[in-house]
Image (cartoon, rainbow, N blue to C red; front, top):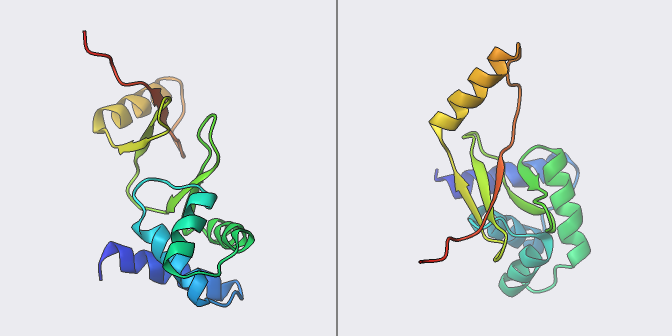
Length: 143
């Protein structure tokens, strides 16, 4: 089973476990969310799901996202200066770079950064339990 189908299955089960019926509109939303590689916000998810299967309300999108987040199958990111964005919860840790001019979000992972963070925490007498790194960036101009 590919990652997209696994995500859809996990989100579907989470909704059912919460007692929420998985309608065609909600199924379209789950599919859109599983396919998205760009960390869309709720209105953008609504637009994409509505294009696939008309009839989903924005309030249904918000309620569904809230349930999925509370069940731990999606992650909500609140990047500075932007509305909340969503992605399926993943087991592989990654960090984010947010372009301050375009809002584009780029995922990245760096073993060097992870080691350095662990070293700094250890030097100060701590171990990292959880962390999130967000870099706010701007494309360099040529010249």
